[in-house]
Image 1 (spheres, rainbow, N blue to C red):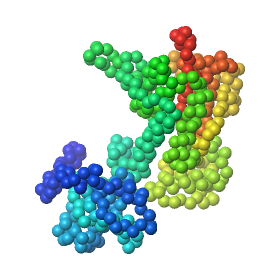
Image 2 (tube, rainbow, N blue to C red):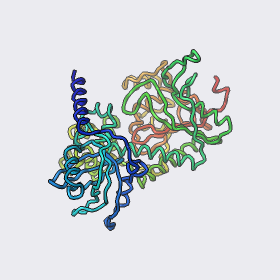
Image 3 (spheres, rainbow, N blue to C red):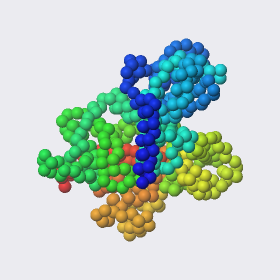
Image 4 (spheres, helix red, strand yellow):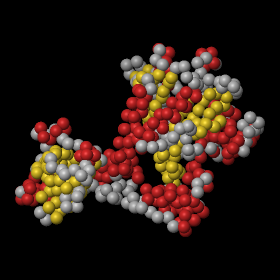
Length: 489
């Protein structure tokens, strides 16, 4: 009932607007075509205090603020995340056109504007509007940008609206696009061929995961959405390509949580005449290149969930660094992104119980820390991590002790108990979340990785690595098992 009344209200607004003017006109002028428009981003990048602007521009974008001061109105126009101020004057437009602007232009409307670049008395770059046209009328009032969407579920359902109201989210999406572009460019520079492999597959493989099933009517067969592009990429190596990669959409019919989703994007790369040492070097070089390209350096800041990772990392930092990170965390999560200063008493309260303090202050136990992505990354054996963090020797510990540790964390192994898989499960549940700085975990028990080649020095292990950054697995690779008999068995 609420939805129907809301829709009726919107339709009524459309009808009333249509009675006054056409809020959805055709682009009927060459000046309004996309190739005739100046990009606000280019204007902003070009702008320096020394430039005396004196040229006409044509821009289009969404109006996000209107401030009326008698015969002078200021409006904020946004285009692809960049803002420029409109200087709308009765003296320039004339009474009729100026009156139409202040009567009809509201937040959310999309306008085409023609005018001359100028600076206001306060020195702000603006466009003195000579002409304008409503391209799309926004019929539903937008929330204010400084409030945004308070309902987290609505934010997730309507990401497009969240991007309109929250420039940080918009910039994050742009960063992702640029990141994918840089991945491709770097891989091309290393001699890789990019390929597309089938998404619909008659036999799924390349990972241990449950697939989504579908039915191909033309073949009268049940097929699957891929869970990994691995097997088809390996066939390209057989065909003679030495370096291949794919940025692929994959689908796994499993859990949904902060780090898992049924549909996600992954990159897989394969290199002939290489082993897991080469692939670790490849991962190091790619990630460090991306960090430098995207940020200008190797250090990034990332929010760590202290309920998941524990507070060990805080104990490893000096008080001055903890204070700096805490101030940055509180400022980042403040509603208006205001600078927050941390007093001695606040710092003492935080150190006494970091998780409780953060939940009280920002509603969640997230603590932003600095992660250094500059190579070389630490390489440590999985068995050594089990010894350090769980105080067990994986080679001599009894199955009873392992099972006790599994039961403490309520860890269930599908298919029943297996010692090798159990040791990896203990690492996953107890240790990986604590690996904040880039860390390659290497040399896994043999049964945990059936497609990996046995270790050249210890056949009980395989040459496999996983790379963890900020407690999250970001890469997985191994020396490929190319013994057909071993694979078959």
